[in-house]
Image (cartoon, rainbow, N blue to C red):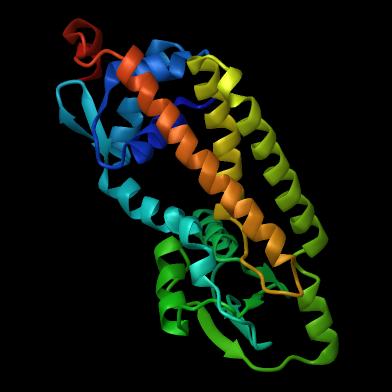
Length: 274
């Protein structure tokens, strides 16, 4: 299966938890997905230019400052349950009506930040989510700004909505669909973990990456809704399964790195990266 080598390189570096990644290791890993060596080299150069990776030596790389900051935000899914408190019926609200919509890059960052924080559009310029996170309004405001929300956006807590507005708000996230995805992802992961011992290492590495990344992305973008908007038991089971495949996948890739990837890169093969 063909995939974007930049995604795989960043995932490998995130999984390395501070260790460096040799260029030849990146080439070998991407080859498992049919990505050519030259495409990997181009991806490394572009990631370096964007500040997402940086050279750690000749032919080796580590996460760059841009990726380190983003990794902290994206890694919050691992503490999802600890970030939730009982819902008292209040709502967190964001107003963007004073912000320009003509700046398409800024608009894209704004919508992405709101989506990552679990907000949905109640109207054209008002976004809403249940106020069931342990972080304060001030902390939520700072996180939204780190994710890309404009500093001029207004954030506040609403203690009561009109009945018709309340009904509309509760339906914004399609809770039944979220519940179905929780159960489907849990089942896929459990089935894969059962068959995993029968796979060879390369096949296990490929499949753990594809299934694990899709599941983690689902959790990253999960709005962390309270009961009764979603089935929190199903979400908790899904999170447990994603934690398990994340740990198993890291272990598989570590074994693959130790047994199949060269410990020292060939200078002739990595020279074109510099």
